[in-house]
Image 1 (tube, rainbow, N blue to C red):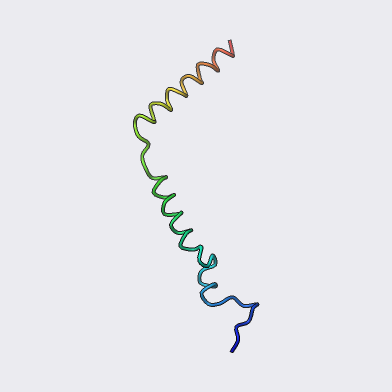
Image 2 (image 1 turned 90 degrees about the vertical axis):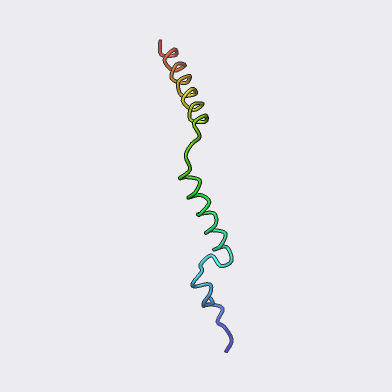
Length: 63
């Protein structure tokens, strides 16, 4: 029996992204790991310094 072009193969129904499903899973796994990672102390300090500078600049403009 010849497959019907209008009906996806069983593997396509199970995996809507086809061969890209594995790539999608790996990207999601990488993203989840990245989001749960802690920000290094040095980086957090630099962000705080930047925020303080921006707040100081904004306060001076308001004077």
